[in-house]
Length: 433
Image: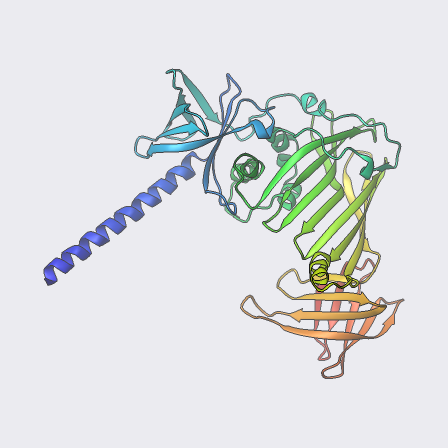
């Protein structure tokens, strides 16, 4: 009996090891083939993308007939079977009986696609498959005749969708900082090509198969005239940064005549963050500057739900008023000159941790809630403070903890974008909006 149990244990261990080995081999295969491929003769594009995006399957296959095809007309493909040892895969188009066979080269730089009629195509790995000239991209922006300063609120709400590869080539690939702020990826080990493919999936997943917590789409808004030395356009981006939020932004982008991106900046935006906050910003653009005014309201949606259930009126909510000013240089670069807040109330954070401070003004009285967290496992200690006095020339608040009658100091910088909180024991903490 003991020998039989040992035998069964060895068999189980062997099968588990074999299963794990196969799973590892399968994942390595997906990693090896993952990428963007172009048929240089026909212009067709195939995406084989392995990326961990919330709410979607890790590996997806998409097909585009050409680079200028509208994103919603791209097609999804489904893997039917594969042979890792043969570097072979069979896939079919979603809701279709059209089946293709992919055979990959040993270096995974190319694959041969065998179509149902027996014809074959060669697809080569290409991180930037868009080949149309910049003027083709530019021609899609409707020209506007609005007088300066241009009120962005008067621009069309939404134009035609910008093709995925034109977004990648002319916007995303040329400004990594902007790309990461709009569509951040968390894997620091990503290569540049993997980062681009991750963003391609964010533009395709939700649109084509309804999957994914995170998504974004881009639209032509308009072409404006700010200088003879560079070309200026407005484009819209909308989507979901995570499951509980939605955004709708308009950006100004300046280009050289050959398509090099000189600068990009938000000129209007809206962010709805479920019941937690809602932000609306309006912008004005002229030849040398951009001014954006934003208002953020915290918890208004939640208060409305609670008030309606009780038959009560909504009380005053915490509100921030932010102003950002940009300068447009003669060469077309866009630089933020100043960011300031019209009022002190708002929510402040610490960049290297989880501490935060809420400063609100209700019925003319300032109140503050400070949460200090030492580390990720720490639940933190919350302190509620009441207003004592304010020194306007120094932007300094004196607040008191009613529980121990000790005084805290809240020192704001000139633009009200940060606050230094000094506790009664003399230790301090700097937070930013």
